[in-house]
Length: 85
Figure 1 (cartoon, rainbow, N blue to C red):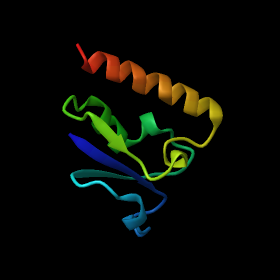
Figure 2: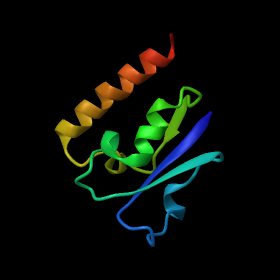
Figure 3: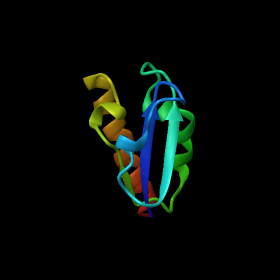
C-alpha cells in the first residue's frame, strides 16, 4: 500500500501541495520541533505493516536537522527490515 505523509503546523494550513499519491493520507498537525517518530500520525504509519511506500512532498517534512534526519533514516530502515520478516 502507498500512503502520503503530510505535516503541517496548524490544521488550517493547505495540504494540497503535499498530497500527490492516491490512497491513504496521514495528516499530522505538529510543531517542527516534534520529530517524525514522535508525532501521532507517524506512530500509526510506522506500525502499519501493510504500508510498503511512503511519499512526502519534501525532505524537510520528515526532519529539520541533519542529526534528526540520520536517526530517522536509521529508524525507517529498521522498520522496513522488520516488516520483511
